[in-house]
Length: 327
Image (cartoon, rainbow, N blue to C red; front, side):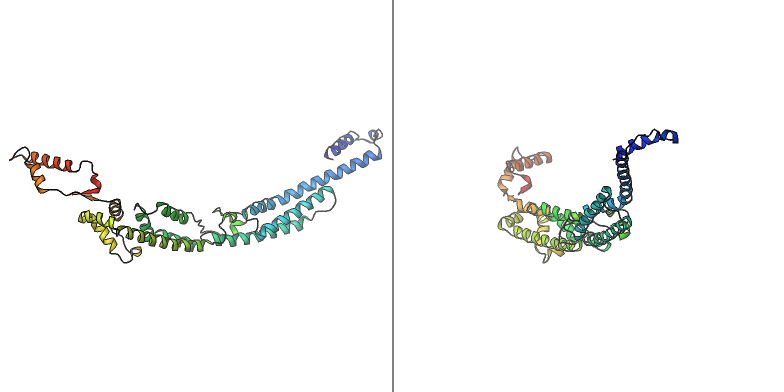
């Protein structure tokens, strides 16, 4: 139709005087066909104008629809409105009906306002606001988190469990500045929250409660496991073989009535690992030691005595791990 209308107008353009018009040779059928093509062209022009006017709202709502889950009532309403709008534009293009521009602008604006309300409700449910974000900061600075990091250095406790908890609470999305006005020009908050990606059935506040409780559970389980391991026969033998300084953190720890809410002894993890890995004792014979010190004759220099003593200890420790051996 556009091509036919263009060709017809170009033909008419040559007959620009009354004299030239006498030479026009067009049948009524050709003129009728050209008129139909012209009407179709004008409808296309109107269609483009309507689309251009509705495009900003349509683009906003299209991105908004991608933000919400498909099963959300607003998404279903949006799909229905979109189908009706496309049908109205198609009927306009075919000349079957007029197009209610003002009515559609009102409908799209109503749909946008409904979206803003739905998004704001989901944002407040699934994103940490100022109060909840401050609470998360307090939890992450809690002494229990310091315990979690320290105890994770003990061989029998799970680094993966610690990392999973820290990743979960660190990965929660905060947004301290949200308000509905931020959605005037864009359907997505500055924080990037998209409800379609939010976990179902758990609000941010509830998730924070769960992580807080989970921290207590992890620490309680870890302390119980560590205390049981340190009280085992094998560990007790190792503890008995330690020096008094090495034993001190373990004795202080096992004496705690509520280790979750207490300050842990310094160097607890290193001492626990020593005890749990096993420590062996080697008894020294005073006679053998004196024999080694006399070897080479007496009197001797201090340097010679030191060398004889070092040689004796090296001989005793041959084939043993000095880190796990006590004399």
